View 1 (cartoon, rainbow, N blue to C red):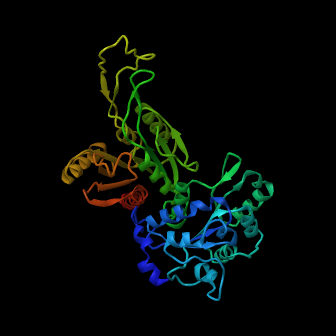
View 2: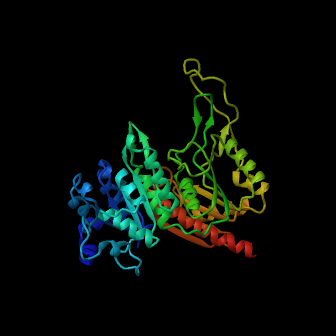
View 3: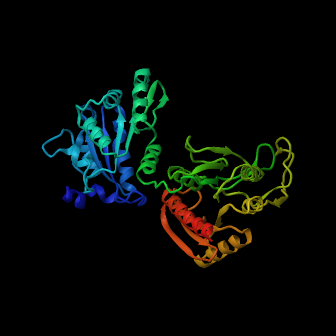
Length: 426
């Protein structure tokens, strides 16, 4: 296995999308659902974030895809039956951490048969035996059901409830087209990250977060907006939730799906953002406010009723006015809340970016500010990656190099918590 770890060419993709799962080992258990065709994709996405992935397949799974495919996908030998090497103990036993010892067991896809066996303590496949061993070793277990909808019946739901009762994490299924379909790849990756990485260091802390663009209407059809997808703020909300915080997300029209578990207030315009933030800060005792939304600096003075006709109007002039800064409004509303602001610039030098961010931090009485260059195509608006500079009141600068926005979110929260604690000690 050491030779495989060092030399298999499939591992050239490891950490190509980030390092958030660096040093983590995932034992991916495959069962006999046709959704098993997604397994190589999921395994390789986990590897791109730094994980070491080992595949374990039931006999039914091997009849749908060849184990050689998972060997290729992961760069590691595939377990299809248990031998004298006691593979279940090797991966999931209560023993010291060594290469191959799993940090998490991912049963994906999980058939109705396998789910019911696990729930009733039946261990007659490599998958069920590894899950049972992991359960006894307190290793996190994620089960991702996939089957025909008619098989997702009350008996199975009872068995799933039993697994949840004993602490196993169940993701999905998605009911569609008469199928209880496997969860989306992105949701599976997110859940793995939540369980394997997240420290519960934000428990008891209430965090208000904004995300996404605004729409400032010219008439009832047309509006002024920007390229923000909302991904950065959503990733912060996801990571904060995973780390135990009580999170409320105020979100514009985001292009990225917001998980159902994130408590969300949906808004549209800059006025909506301001009113929502003022309202939440008035009635709830938030500890931290992170303003990651790309809120318009200007809006039309008037919104014209109906639709402006291009037949009647050959030239259109729009009078705009400056919108209030949400972080300024938040500070006036609550002098105690710890504020993390964002400052986006385009095509400026590192020094200019940091200096302008620091000026905004001082003028708005924020506690921390995150600066990035959204003029770059590889980071910022619309991208899945970012590169930021985080500046505090003493102008101490933390540079977070280009990485996935989930990783950036985690580092922003690390520094937010560190500075929040320092301020409270003072």
